Image 1 (cartoon, rainbow, N blue to C red):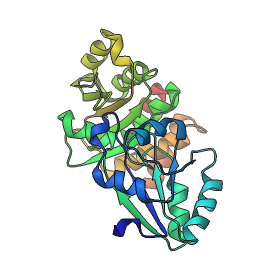
Image 2: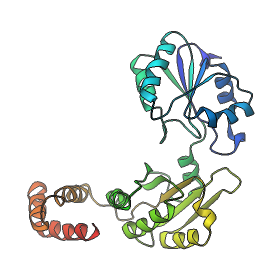
Image 3: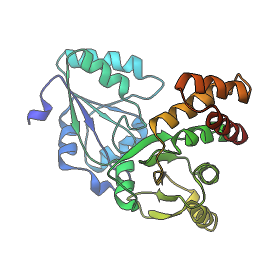
Amino acid sequence: MNESQAGQLFIVATPIGNLADFSARAIEVLKSVDVIAAEDTRHSKYLLQHYAIQTSTISLHEHNEQQRSDALCQRLLAGESVALISDAGTPLISDPGYRLVTTVRDAGIRVTPVPGCCALITALSASGLASDRFSFEGFLPAKSSARKQVMESLKSDARTLIFYESPRRLLAALEDAVLIFGEQRQACLARELTKLHETIETRALVDLIDWVKADDNQQRGECVLLIEGSQNEATADEQEVSRLLKILLTELPVKKAAAMVANITGGSKNEAYQLALKLQQKN
C-alpha cells in the first residue's frame, strides 16, 4: 500500500468508545508500520489485540514526548515507518503529538493523517447547536477563578464553544457557566460518546444543571460540553477594551485603568469605567 512506504509518520485516529468505529485503513496502517507510538501502551493493547495488530509499541506521552520525538525522527530518517495513536480519538486534539509532528515535518519527513473519530466533532454533529462556526477550547482550568476568566473572555464570541471537561468538575463548570453566560444560554452535555451509556442532552444552562444534579450517572465518564455562541457578538473594539481592562485592573484602580484604556483606544472614558466596574465585581 502506498501509505505504508518507508519514512512516513501516520497520525491514526482510533475509536472513542465503540471499537466498530475503527476504519479498515487505520487497521491496515497499524499492521504495516514498523512501530506504533501510543499515549499509553497498556491502554492501547486492548484495541490492538482486538484487531490482531502485532506491531511493536512504544510510549509517547506528555512527560517523554520531546525525547521520544527525537528518537522516532531518527528511525524515520533511517527508513522506518511510524504510526502515532492516542488513547482515544484523533491524536494531538488535547493529546500528545504536537512536538513529534513538528520535529518530523522540520526534518522534511512526510506526515500522513488517517482520519477517524474525534469526540468534539461527534458531539457537535448531534448537539443541535450551530455548527457553521465553532471554537474548540480544550480542557477548562481546574480552579473556578481561572475557569471563569476563560469563560469571560469567550462570553461575546458568536461561535459555538466546545470544551472537554472532567466528570469530577462538570457540575462546578456548569455553575460557573451560568454565572458568565447566563441562565438561558443553550448548552449541550455529550457524555460517553459511542458507548453503552451515551447521553447527549441540550438545554438552557440552568435546566442542564438541574438535569445533571438529578442523575449522578451524568457526572461519570468522558464529557464534552458545548455552549451556544453569543447572539449579541461584541465588536472587535469592545473586545479589545475588555481585554485591556482585565490586564490593567490587576495593577490599577478602576478609574485610572478606565482612563488609560479610553486614551489607548480612543473610546469613551465613561463606557470604559462602567465596564471596568462590572469586571471588578465579577472578580
